[in-house]
Length: 345
Image (spheres, rainbow, N blue to C red):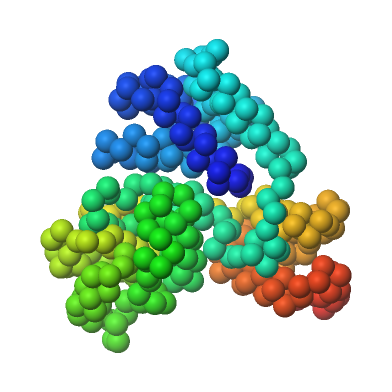
């Protein structure tokens, strides 16, 4: 579930004023998770309290209890008893009311549809949030693994990571981070492990002035282990900027020691409905029109809506993002979607 950035930041800052969170170490922060599902697998272990609380908030966004209760609200409820009657308590109650508005779909985020309709905003908030809030406080090389059958998702992951580093943690400014380009794909003939390692000097030059995101797709466990071992060695000395190396790897492939596996992106019907709903609301479309749009995408994603494959979903999202950008007038967009429905494409 998407919430406004300033509301999320305000929640984190006020949670940091809760006594057990501020001074109780990790056990004190664990109090915030009381009675919640045991799915909060990622924590900041560097001693950075702010980063750890932000990680808990990020992971709570899309987690619901057995009774359907939103875990982000439960996080607030677990903090309230310690600050009831105080200024912090009053602020948390206000934030809770605002979160309820978000949950009910009453909170509007005033953005142009073409800005909202970005593929990198789809489904990647949790793995990106975990990565961004787990980066070390001192710039260094860090290794991450995204489970994906093809390199396609890696580009969107890096784009989302770049933006989140600006908007959420302030790791870097908009012009202070660069990607090395499209994901490199390891293959035994043309792009071997030594070929990629030889790119290290160019990456080092880039690191002199910017933080760097380096996406690489590796489908062989031995290649992945050898590549990470060599890259980690190449950049083991203190760096002036973060070097974030992300491997895309197929499911079931052994992950190199020292790299962190991020949660597997999961595509559901609800994800598509939520993504389209945000766009549709900026167009001020009716609920039934938004639902129809989501069903149109689902119809073209798979014959079985419970089997949403990464490649097919991204193809559809890219196509519909293009339609929103091309047809700036809502009526023109609606007509284009009706034509799409007629031709079944």
